[in-house]
Length: 75
Image (cartoon, rainbow, N blue to C red):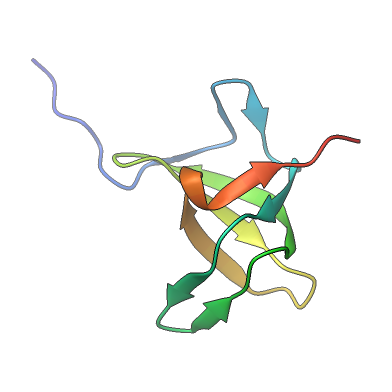
């Protein structure tokens, strides 16, 4: 059995593609700071094992958040 590549990234997962827009649905804390609920973000890439979204805010900062922290925006 092959081993899983932890922290491998991709541009698509379960029908979600890079460039998709999301909004935070709860507060998220990282070492670089905090991001509040209601912030709009753009998907930059998807990390796996566990699956997380790497999202960019309007200031260009990248946030790595679990899937349950954001909700997709519909155009």
